[in-house]
Structures are given as C-alpha cells and as structure tokens.
Length: 132
Length: 150
Image (cartoon, rainbow over the protein chains, first blue to last red):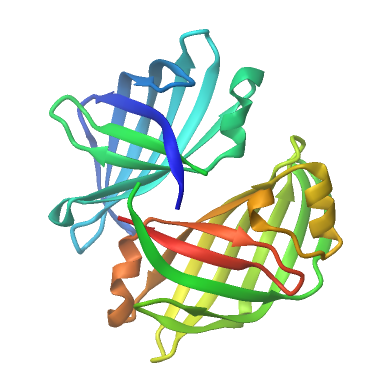
C-alpha cells in the first residue's frame, strides 16, 4: 500500500464522561477541548468534539470520534474516525474521514486515510496518512 | 504506513438496481452473487445471501461504496465484512468502467477500508484489525487486495 503524510493531529481532552456498561460494552466519552494539526497541505486548530470509546470484554477499545478542524485560513473541516486501540498489543489505528465545503481543501472529500495513534499524558497524537 | 497482505477478495456481482436520485446523490445497489478470498492466513468463499454493495454517486462525482458481505472460511467459520470506500477518476476512465471495459486500476482511485466481525476462534484476530484495500473494477465484479495495517 502506498501512502503519503497528511497531518499530525494533537488532541487535548477533558475529564472522561463514564456512561458505563451498555449493551455493546463499557462506554466512555472523551470530550475534546482543542488541539492542533499540521501537514504540508494544511494546518490549524481543533475547535472541539469528542471520542466515543467502547471497551470490549477482551480489553480492546473501539473508537468513534468526531471533531471540527479550523485551518489557519479559516476553513472548517468536519473530521470523523473509527478505530481500534489495543494497548496490550500496542495497536492504536484509525480510519479518518473528512468533509469540507472549502474548495481549497476539497481534496479531503476524495481520499481515504489511516492514522497511527500514540497516547500522551496531555492527549493522543495521531499521525495521519492519505491512502494513495 | 506498514502493511501486510491479508487477502485478495474477488466478488461476482449481478445487475445493479438503480434506486435513483436520493437526498445525498444517486443511489445504486449491487447484489453480490458469490466470490472467493485467499490470503496467507485465511481463504474461503463469499456467501450470496446477505452480500451487496450500496453505491452513492455524490454531487462532486465521487462514488461512495458501502459494502457488506458474509465470508465463509474453508474450515467453516463465518465472517461479517463491512467496508466503506471511495471511487473516482477522470471522466473518460469512469465511462469506460461503466461500459464494462478493462481499465488499468492505476488510472482511477478505488480504495476501501474493510472491517470484520467473527466468532470463529481461528479468525478472531480479524475483529480488531484496521485494513485498507485497493480495488480493481472488472466487468464480472471487483477484486479487492486487502492489506492489514500493522
């Protein structure tokens, strides 16, 4: 598979909202309070959003994130991803998707991407690549 | 991005059903009549009953793919596969595909992101795998080369 770097995304999170055991597992919601993203073709800040995280019985987490990004030239980008976090196997991978109305960033509407996540004390960092 | 081959999946398709203009674009459904898959760790066939691809042609010319298929491994395990994808390219290439002509898959963008669910112990590793696929649209049905994201 060929890929090229799209952005490095840093997210800051607030205190977890623990919904608790649901039919699909243990649900926690991580509010996203801000952050930043930077790549060769776009950069800016994270306006906010959240990640809906469901823990399975086997210790893996299913991620379901929605955030709004604002580029440094004021375009808004709706970003979502689903993903898997399995700390026992150091596997933290996501499938980001983007929607925007800004012509300059319309290329985001036409691509699929993958992310490699890392947990940091102040929030996760995702290295996102475009699938070529 | 480090990946390794998970499987090559070939599906055969029946005549598409044109749902027509819907709020988000033009909807078409494509029944999947069968197929097979093969990779270093698993192989088997595609079950036709509940397998199809839901296509949505967006206003910006991008085709969204939303495939669901049931796979059966050669040792009897059932796997539910779902995959979201995108297909787009130069108009003349997309027109050639629509006519059923053979087109070099490098001439257009056809990528999908399959996810799997199974209770079959030998395939349990699929449950937590993020994968990406490149598609090759053939007249008889698409061929997906699916890679596991390492």
